[in-house]
Image (cartoon, rainbow, N blue to C red; front, top):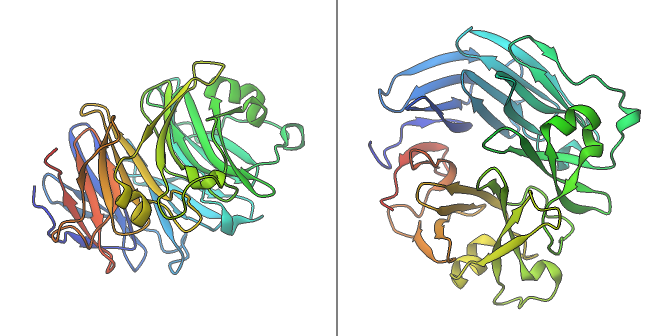
Length: 343
């Protein structure tokens, strides 16, 4: 694999794995959705998505099997495209209330062997669309299941049995909820279970979060969020919450690199912002920040790799495939490259 050689220029891109191959889906400045095969370097046009997108807004992509979703992150529209059938599988619209403060909630999941799309249809409502039968399998009255909560980023467990929502309530204050898919199909938002016993900062929804296994969720928080941490030398932790235990058994791992925490991971309010990934084979975490810095951290909290080298210090980490240990990097000029850490 070539490393740090610009492969493409795009507004947004995502890595995905289909069988043993890695692919990059990307949307260019003209709004064209492409698929790039990492192994063969074959690049092909998927569809002209400019009619669905506001091109001067932030764009996010999601991919699962033969499906790819493209949305305007802080707007109301998006679509799912079936690359194999070469057709639009779903056109999405969510409510516009406070939409500028909520990432477009979307995740793919498998239900009874069929590919489905879980996505926001209103600020406080999620629905599930079966991409194979082309029908919604959630059938309910909004009023009956009203939930005073703004849905934002979603994450589905590896076994497809649970998902978490990384959103917020009014004051505002952030809150992460776990839903068991089977219970959500019966009681919808009322089936919520809070995740993590930590001091919520107020504005820190969409905090770095990922699944470690089918029972464990990892998220990042800092002592500054409680107002008790040292402003000049804050501490940050990876919290591991066990959803199988009704008493919310959890452990914390302190991130031991003080310079990384203070300078790159936390903003001025002491909030962690960015993305969190977990590599089960190597048993380590990959953390990307909203600044140009990312790091690999082991279970002891030690930074075993960081992007502070001259070769890497101009690249954001925008996505990571743990199974193949491949990073998708982006420069400020929207040039995307691939990198494989030697860890």
